[in-house]
Structures are given as structure tokens and as C-alpha cells.
Amino acid sequence: MIDLYYWTTPNGHKITMFLEEAKVPYTIHAINIGRGEQFKPEFLAIAPNNRIPSIIDRAPKDGGEPISVFESGAILFYLAAKTEKFISSDVRKRVATIEWLFWQMGGLGPMAGQTHHFRNYAPEKIPYAIDRYTNETNRLYGVLNKRLADHEYVADDYSIADMASYPWIVPHAAQGQNLDDFPHLKRWFEAIKARPGTIAAYAKAKEINATPPSAPDEEARKHLFGQTAAKTA
Image (cartoon, rainbow, N blue to C red; front, side, top):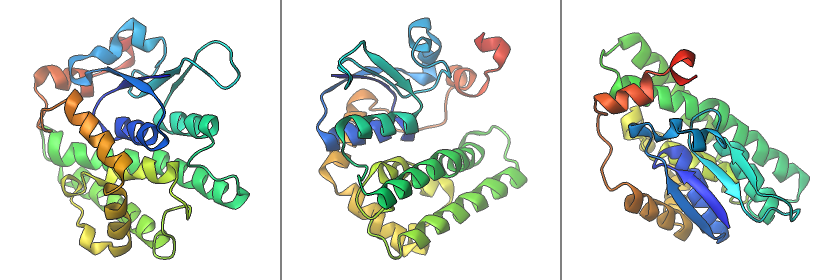
């Protein structure tokens, strides 16, 4: 059994997509990040970066004590290794999967997140910041589109690399991106969107948080955007 500490963000969706695809039993513990629940001591004990998602594996492969894992990419890699699913045993496909997982974690996620912030959440519209991050997100969409021109999925077989990237493409309109400009990426996106595991994961999100995305209120802004080392110590 996996305990999943989760909120309805792209990084949260990655993990529910895997668990639904792999048919791993799990229990969701909702962490409402707009209300500061990510700063509770019991959550920080397993997620020291005060970010969702995090998991506790109550039945690790070695049969020992429960294992906690934080950071969405590390969680995907851990679950893939545990279940031996969605990461190939073929060395070349495995390396490609790891490369593209790291690409998402280091590039697509952070850049798309900043794009979304400055375009939609920042109280002051700063043209330089909007252009900087929108253009970089566009470049990264282009990188993924080029990869998918001759690969059905990013590492040929459907893998954790696809699960990592897909949720960050879902809010493409809010990032100022048009999928029609990226035909190979669009084909890939529609294929993943139609998978039963994806459908189930996003249905679960609506059960947890039925409120559609909107501009955060003042309390949410304080918790999401106003933290420093001193405030979280």
C-alpha cells in the first residue's frame, strides 16, 4: 500500500497517473497547499522541501520498514523500480527514460511553472518576465515535439518520462502555447489523454479538489509565493 500525500497540481498528477496505470493500491492524503498544510510538522517529516507530492511505501521491496520518498521525479523512479513497470530493462530505453525524466524535472516543469506564474498569478504584469518564460517554454515544447517526430513516446515505450511531462502540457493555453504549432507533441498528448490511467487520475483530482483553477486568494498567495527560509524555519 502506498500513502500518497497529494494536491491537484501537475507534480501531483504524475504520481496518480503512475499508480493508476500500474494498478498499485494507494491512499490519498490531501495536502491543501493553498491553506498551508504543506508546512505541518507531520508532512515536513517526509517532505522536507514542503512541496507535494510525497509518498510512504508501507510494503517496500526489501520487506523492511516503510520508506518515504519526496520529489515527484524520485517518486516515479522509485515506483518504477519497485514494480518493474514503465521503465525498460533495455539499457538504451532505460537511459532515454532517465534522461527525459531529468529533462522534465530540470527544464519543462520549472520553466512552465514560471510562465504560468508570471502570466496568470503575478500581481504585476512584467513584460520581460512574461516573454522570457513564455519563450523558453515554447522552446522546450519544440524540443519535445522534435523528439516525438520519430518516437511514439519519449523513450519509445510509454514510461515514467511521459507521465512526468504530460501534466505540464495540460495547461498549455495558460502558458501561452498552441498545440497546433507542435503536431508531434499534440499527437502524443492526445494519446496519453485517452489512456484509462490518465482518465482515472484526473477524475481522482476532481474528487479531491472540485474547485477550478483560479487566481489565488490572499491566504493562498502567502502560502504559495511568500515563503522564505526565515518564515519556514
